Length: 261
Image (cartoon, rainbow, N blue to C red):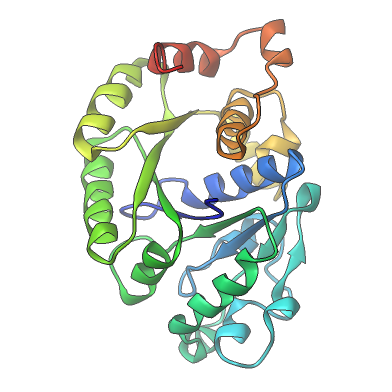
């Protein structure tokens, strides 16, 4: 069973951390024991978006041999377990990225899903999460530069022995659906497993340091995250609310995935 997914992108700014947090929370809402871990030990963001920037122990201390992994696990929305990285430069300098393999082995044995928020770009710290997970999911924006950078990350993943199982198109406008379907799958050579629409509620939820699937559960983006989580968990997606009023993401999903089921 695939349990550990690394959420990766070619460069920063694609919304990778937002995807990790919301997808993890959605899985927890489905009753799955889910952990989300910030593997970006140099430019950590996961703790920030959940209001955990001042916690006493982070992944930095664990990778530096100063604390156990149990001390760095915090409770998030709907019971999702959060392992943030620290914000200090000293903590980053003392952390040993090679120990992340041991941390992952420990965590994956106690959960249904582990989502690893990987560093963007090509670096030593960024390569390890690509190699240690069961599968890698690329987060890509519907611009050519983002697609090209994601392709580089896919190639790097394969070089280090990892496997990209698919891509999530993030921040997609209604006029970009054709580009998303045709360009991404053709250019990346992987299936599109989900589409997250451009949704102002994501920024509003971020202001409250709360996942959009919690703060605005009926928004288009929340529905998209919930649909992806259901597919990963192998459970039927509850479309009760959608039947009451079909939104943009529902129409877009029907166009993109017509004929796949």
